[in-house]
Image (cartoon, rainbow, N blue to C red):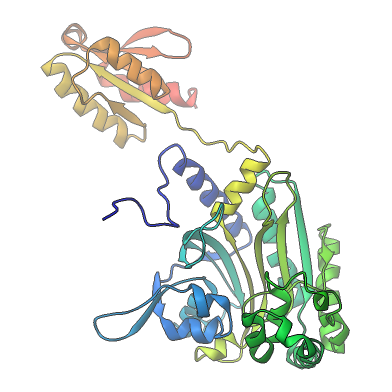
Length: 426
């Protein structure tokens, strides 16, 4: 029996977890500025939610979900993506009836997909995403694209490419669907088994196939842009106009499709163009959707959102040699010698921590020299030394590890003194 972590999962240890914390804090702050509020949904849901919300014809539902039967005989699935759960919550809690609309959410948490693990793609991965529900205004599409792009820019990424497309409304999609069937049907037997099924269930997804991407029929496939009706064309033009006024660079790619069934109108992806990032360049993707709210029992409501993998974000930061400003150092390390000094050190350490100061101490009974080495390894800014002589005099020896300066400070003034030293007297 293996006691290692399951394949496709990972431990995020100290030294790396600080980077995750920094990224998560920056993303949450960005959402606050765009007035998106955090929502937290269950890690598992009823399987039917994803079958109806994500789509029976998708690879996620057909091949990648972690599904099991609970003790009550109910089919339960670990969430493979965030949108369906957010929409389910929106409907279940009747948020659509609140006066302040649109509803703007962000989420962050683990998702689960059974796929071949590779760099930047795990079976358990952390996804950050946003959803804006209840508005058909093209301006909110542009807002979502702006938030997505700034999620990367504000963390220091520069080699980015925004690709946009329109999937049109239902009428446009049906016309394009019929054209795709006419185009690919003569080549049906030459396509992979999955695409032969997709051609009947959701022909748009044939364009997204990794196995058949080199097939000559792919190059001559009809573009959705050729089948957009006037409303869809106008909608897409307005989205582009808003991107232009925000000075956001983008490329229109008629071949861009999204793998989930509920998308229409605006679809987009953000890619890394950093050298050495890898063959799979997509960092995040999203788009507008209609029908998903109704599919899970709510009123007719449209939405738009996107999602990104935190793992792939960290890969992109590494590829561009972006150093995150994470402070892994320690404010204070407490060195104590002697039983009475140790008891006092425990008391003062607790008081310093409650005063908001980061403190650690020796718990292995090391000698003074070894304790100073430990303080140095931990990157401690200051070392407090308390022995029998200091205790008798009612003082603590404070050493600044950067300058080497030492001074004695009264025990009853140590909290005030350390606050001043760590804040520069502010």
